[in-house]
Image (cartoon, rainbow, N blue to C red; front, side, top):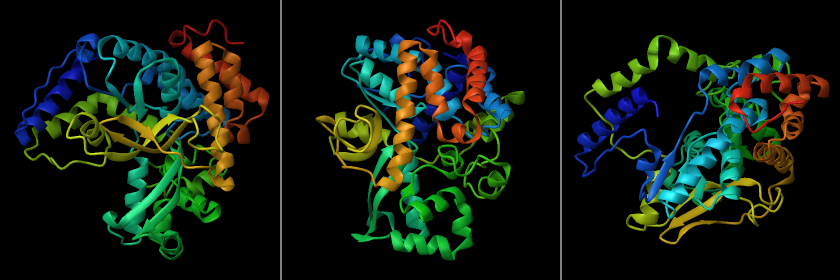
Length: 406
């Protein structure tokens, strides 16, 4: 709906089509109904509420001592992001039901679990959510032990941004001893992912999301400045774990229109890399309405008999098979107790936040945030209430379904 950004992206996609000499045609529009009419597949990544409101998801908790890095998934920042996005996503689903009811809807918008949970319970749309953390982490671990990816197999399950490699095998043999050895004996590998490596060394299963993200989802790494300095500042791979990296990056891109320069530079470059990347979407669409080659991926679906140890009906990230028959999730049993506890707490907080968004009950928002592991490690109940009230006040124009905040 932003015509300037739409123009840049149209030019970018056309450049790819021309470089590959593909028999494809781009139609760009700000009319959602026109875009959806008769679609076989729908991709969605949106940002409801610009940086002028999103910044308070980071800045207000920081003022209270909750030092958030990315803030797009869970905790106070992720929950308020969900409250703004869930009504929009449900509106999009209503249009999909109207204009392309048989379409496969692939969501790339965060907070992934809460948005998918709301869409899957409140609409009839065939929707799943996609992330690149599972396959990205698998590739990273394979590289650490010098294993070709085509010789690696794994079983991964949990919730979005907090799934766990329950198995990681090289040619059918458990590769975890090799990974542990690489982390303990190679300082470069350890320092590359300090938070996640500490979690693996102590909990015995490797988590899927990068250290910058992962540090927010538990109480171990961000509750004191000295811990942030030790674990979250110098070794978090692609996203420094220092305060508000994501916000700082966005502010830099917005200042003076730097994002325009970056896109234009790519458009003006002569070469285009046409090699298919690691994202799942193209393979899923191909499996369902292309040449029907089945494709297995980790997707976000509701938990009905998929992970026994997590709340029934919550949104989980598990193996899913895409085929001409559609999407079918695979049960994985229970998570190991050592990682199930933190995963279950976060899943329950997400469930409560979704219920709050659907009912307009601010008390449920407060209860979801006061049980968040990081927030509860830093603040008292009364302090959390003050923080939530302040966040509601900043978001009041974006949350019309919440009639009162106290």
